[in-house]
Length: 566
Image (cartoon, rainbow, N blue to C red; front, side, top):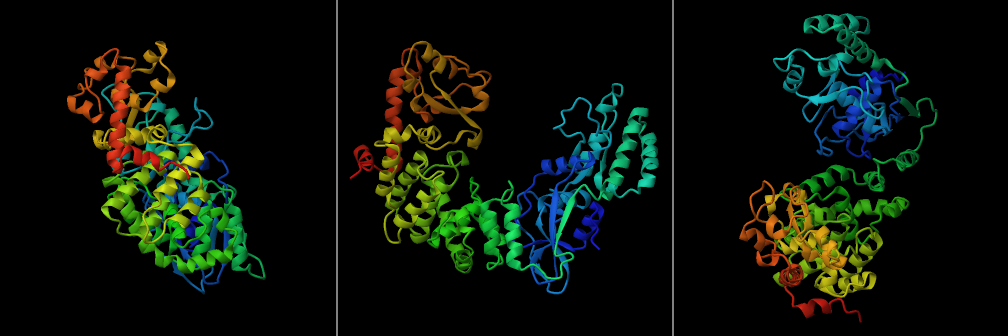
């Protein structure tokens, strides 16, 4: 008979009786969500539900990982067994894995510790954690437990910590937990209030896994005389997960593909890892999956695909052989972004990676573009990213890529720019540069190099906005892209409304900007002087235009002509 207590569920997971079907996605919860779940459990809150399917028919599955490494994806092999009766998890994987890791395993090589002097509400908000739970090494726990922490007198109970392995606490016999806690309190020299708190914590942790109600477990086919068909089981999986935040439409599509493409999840994660190696980007599994669909000439909108099981079954047979070409195309594109476009940060992909997908398809069908074609691609990348023509427009992106990105032809730059002109009224380089400040500043800087940490850079006005507004300067000039530059966050803290000719020489407690620093920003000391705002705006706009056109390998009239609709 199935044991519904937390102890029973964890024991069956450990024995391989409760397993994960191949269609389940990897474990994605971070340590803060795991510790919050344990806080909920210790406070007596319901932990939600788990839906398990009892079956002895052959199904591909994987065992729960007790030692989880963040962002590792699926790193275990799948098994199958046509004779052993098991429970496959259809819903509740994240909670069950979190409990299994906390009670038996590690997260990032660290075990879960609980401060047994915590747990009281005190002045905390109900939404805060009452129990201080942390994944720690033995040394980290020892350092936190060190007492006294200074040469002064010992502080109140709330300031002292006694971190104990949660695994050890849950293994205590409830009848002995209070005695063991009292003995340990004496050894540590705790006062009466601390001893009481510690004893309560020991008892709470020792008894919590005996609960039959903390986690509601629902079983399919437990007592049924007729087993539910696999198609119906999959439908259950789709329906119970379609409303969740963790499982998205792409996960449902992956589940359907997995019925025919058995290694889809580990293969996609391996591909993503290869693509992102030595790259400053975060190309995702969904990006690769959409690229595969484009390469096959398929619809890329996941919500449209999951309702057509027949089409998905056909795709599952055809997509695997396209994976090497997709991986190579993504690697070629990311190299072009870094070396030719001078784009080295995720911050420039406003609206996600949708805008990159037509270029991936182009590299799939045209793997070795000429140097001249690469220049054309650079211009096209900037047009797509700066305009946002494909961001949030899945249907438009798919239709354009499938129709225009053809083997043996140049990238359809004219068609792209005319699409941008049609939808957004962009008719010139100036219009384009005005749409995406970060990318325009990236061009102005010749590619971001400050601190080699573009994610943390800030942008700010060169001539202070407040000063210009007080003088009645029109907003379109005050907030023109030529009046912005990238600067370090620590520099921006000291900026305030200081005039530029003063601030660039003394940016707070930071070193003064050098002539080379100004040159990188297309500035001179003369242009920063009082009364030079309009001259600076005009001169810097011209220089940014020149730098953009040099990057694109085009003349001004040639670039603007691209947007002229027929």
